[in-house]
Length: 204
Length: 348
Image (cartoon, rainbow over all chains, first blue to last red; front, side, top):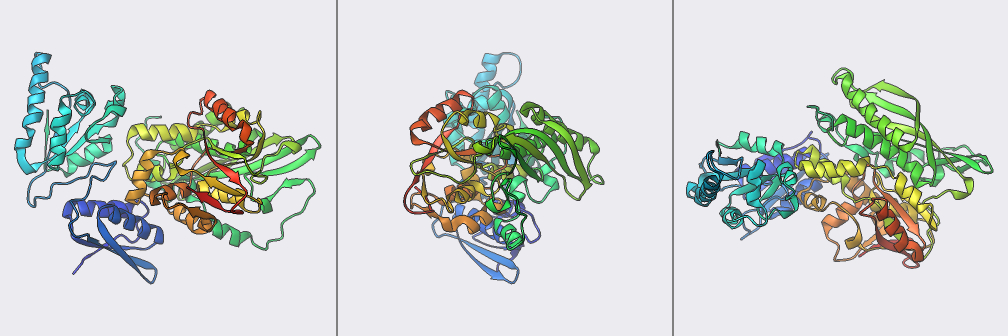
């Protein structure tokens, strides 16, 4: 029995955001969404189709019920570009967010700091499935850009389902916005939202 | 941008031109009404053009327009700039020169600090100053949602009026701003748009169409409109109806925000885009290669969009070069006027 996600009375784009949040958290095999206008019906349908759901909808009076069923054999939903929302699927696992604020680790000697930070990134995967997101701000964003040794390391994390987010304003500040090679460009609102949703945040 | 914590887009239901009444509804409201007749009314309501034109003498006519809407960006000053640029655009699209303006304001004084209104009007004034337009007055009402815009009056020579009509077979169609502001505004409202993209979109929406209008004045332009709430294809349909010709659009050549395509897939599409599609889709034949998200983009309601210019084919390349030279980087030929199919838009 499907519990309907009631999005009636919500103004665009709120219904899509509600559905997105629900899928992020529950990763359901099937979902039913109630909306009260046709634009919302079409938008929610588009969202579900884009995330590998087979979608049908029916009108019931002035409302619409949109039903999505995950297509057989479909992979975990692709990253919902341009927003980083790919989730770990392990149930019960705590979500750890790692915030990297610099390209070096600690203070003292920058050459040493560089080495330590790179080593830290390489070792991050040992956190296992609880590692949820790695967010780069300030000079840390350089790890996501063309020419950084960090790129292949971070790609490996992405492949294992970790969300990589790089601060757009920071990338722009260092003139490497167009050189990002891995992860998603993000903004402070998303960073703050991620912090709130994470079970723990580790700042480096 | 001014430093402010208020997010204007969270205070309103519809955003920008996406808040426009559905085109079919407006037609139903106006249908059959007894409209005034005057030999000096050169362009009036029945022509559904960007602005009305009234002849004063053989070499002078007034061109008048009004536009206002709820905020589509969070920053009050930017919103004021965008609303003013959008209102002024109709005068430019007719080939006119704006001269005076009046503020049109609805303000929720009970829930919003008056300093917000000040910032909005400041933004509008700065655009008027840039356009050489004098503010002569205005009208403010209390309302549940903020709305702002201008009523603008300009001058135009009665023989040099550019309307949506008069497409000539062979004309090239040039667009001067990227499409996707409705979808991007929806993403801004959802908190999904990065600051760099938000800034880029705001820069484009606050940009006056004045320079594009000035440049096109030197070329053999047969028709022009500005792309706003009815979307690219909605406004193009207005040009094509009763034109005696058809239009072919090359989707790949249409300037747009690439991010808007991603968000269209996610369903971050303003309701106005669906209205536009439902109302004007019947004029459009899409090639199989045109993706659904690109179709959405072509119907996306634009706020303070660019000019769509029909120019003689032998001058198209020069006009694009001249537009680029004034800083309108994205200007591009997006299609051409064709004989067949008659009064249809083919998108390939």
